[in-house]
Picture 1 (cartoon, rainbow, N blue to C red):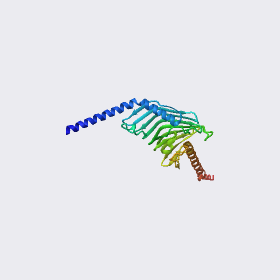
Picture 2: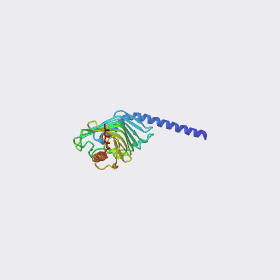
Picture 3: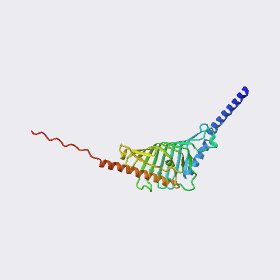
Amino acid sequence: MARRRKQILVGLAAIAALYLTALVVVGYAARGWVADVVRDRLALSLDGRARVGRVDLGLVRGRLALADVEVERDHQGQLRLAIARLEVDVAPLGAVVVDRAPRQITVRGARLAISGGGALGLPHRAGPPIAVGGVEIIDSELVIAATSALPGLAEVRVKLDRVRCGPTRFVTPMSWLFALDVLEARVELPGGRGFSIAYRDRVLTAVGGPFGQAPVTIDIELPRIPGDDEPAQVRAVAFSLGTKLVAALARGWLSDQLAPKPTTPAPAPAPAP
């Protein structure tokens, strides 16, 4: 009986080793196919031209890593998306064959540049949204050029040090905004002025630049369910945040103006000779 049990264990170990080896080989061989699938899916979803550089596929760990991902679109405004590295966590041990939903994506070194009022708009023929279990964005940048919604705006840069989001459905590259949990960023305005912002627990904090060194906080409630026109919602959220920040800045300035000014005591009279 003991010998039989040992033979079974040895057989199971051999099968497991062969299975893991096969996953490694298949993951290596399928890199080109995966690059083509990701490229075509991005091009269809964002209605533009896409390119994918290097691909690493680990079926054992359940990790897909892509480098030098680019998407361009020149109609309805201009959109340029470049990602230095995109890491996707999927079901491990080859289970991705039946469970293809990404569990987590991490974006590193991305740059999204948009210009024109319809830069985020997509036609109805665009592909289905890409759903992921969570999103993290690190060391990335958002560049917003002049749009019809904000005439006269030269360029605003938002440097995203760290962004963490919950489950997200990517209808546009800004869909993560509707699942935002944590944000640490710096906003650079035309003329070289800028300020830092942070978001956590429904509170937005701004400090530096026009806000001074004393943090300014505002309570905000981001929409969690995108509507039929997500680009319009993104613009509405940006306008609302801008309005609240300007109002907070105005209140701070008014408070400073109305605060009692310290009085300087009159000089003592000189002693009589």
